[in-house]
Image (cartoon, rainbow, N blue to C red; front, side, top):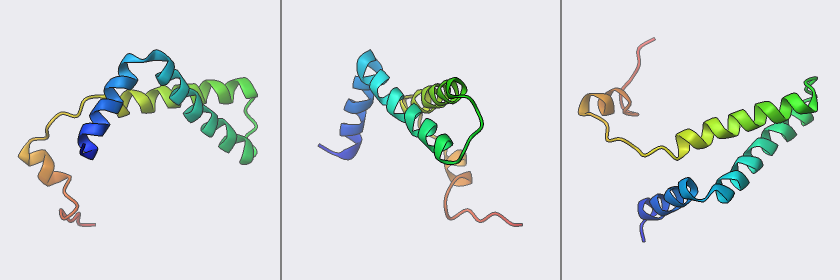
Length: 86
């Protein structure tokens, strides 16, 4: 099985299995919560939980979205060899 095939199986499973999604969401949210705590955030515990949950859901929404093929123009614009002049 290729990585791409395995990734497709994983993301399809995550989209269908609410408990698996929730487990990942909780772990991502707690990573945010812990980092905020270590950095000395003055936000309340409830606010850190709320932000962490929103961030985790935002990340998972995009992570689990099917990838649409890019147009040739879009691929060229985002190519690592496309140099941006400053």
